[in-house]
Amino acid sequence: DAKTTQPNSMESNEEEPVHLPCNHSTISGTDYIHWYRQLPSQGPEYVIHGLTSNVNNRMASLAIAEDRKSSTLILHRATLRDAAVYYCIPRGGTTSGTYKYIFGTGTRLKVLA
Amino acid sequence: ETGVTQSPTHLIKTRGQQVTLRCSSQSGHNTVSWYQQALGQGPQFIFQYYREEENGRGNFPPRFSGLQFPNYSSELNVNALELDDSALYLCASSLGGLAGNNEQFFGPGTRLTVL
Image 1 (cartoon, rainbow over the protein chains, first blue to last red):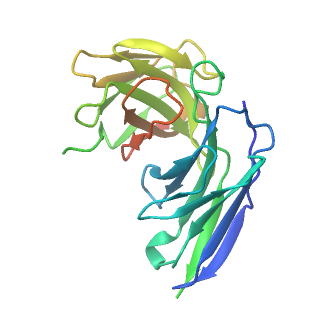
Image 2 (image 1 turned 45 degrees about the vertical axis):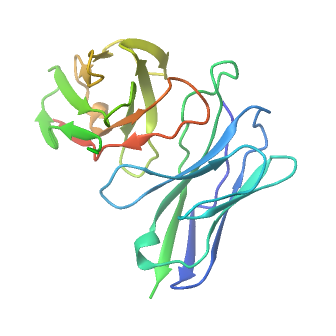
């Protein structure tokens, strides 16, 4: 299983951008990089995923390094509702063996008003 | 569109008992995954069901078993409960089995306490 390394915690001021890093140096060539977040007392929530190119959606942007060994989740303007634990998860299909979602301990993001 | 629902919300059992947790997947989703989340930890993958068959399993003993029904709802059964089974159990539904690029939609979880 591909291993990930994320900071245990980060802080951001409200309305400022947040860059959440993730190292996944053992990722295989066919693994997608997924990001989920978990708000207090809720199940995880999908944020974004990508393979090689940078990706944008209404929630966030995902910047993937050219060698794919790291990625960064970007929240353009943090709000208090973005306070959550963010998980970075490499995930492949059946041929890669990494079809399971392997959640690490994630990064706990604190947003300051 | 109805999201993923789980029942019950909370459950208390004693060691050695058996428990069944239930999950209704999001409309149209044919794949259900189950996770165990201990306090302060990330979710741990238990297994996945696709079109009523188990097609992926994590490092959990056989006393953790499941079912998926024709309407794609699912059950997680745990026999011979141990104290360490106390956790939040999460169900997630998705479309397309083990494809690497499909997203999962999680339910709110069932909090199981084993005394």
